[in-house]
Image (tube, one colour):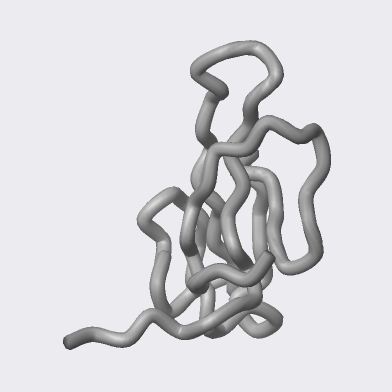
Length: 79
């Protein structure tokens, strides 16, 4: 299930596939996730001076669905 870095999908299964994480607002370490940070920055929170940023926190529109974000994938090219 390959995706683009920072791509967000709404899925009907209740687990996070390899290279994906739940959009639950968790704190990430910039040095360990530099490519993802390059795209997201501190848009959803965090503190660069402390070396952290946050994933988006997205609520499910209905029971049984949840959002996931690609944390290791293809770099999105610009045209």
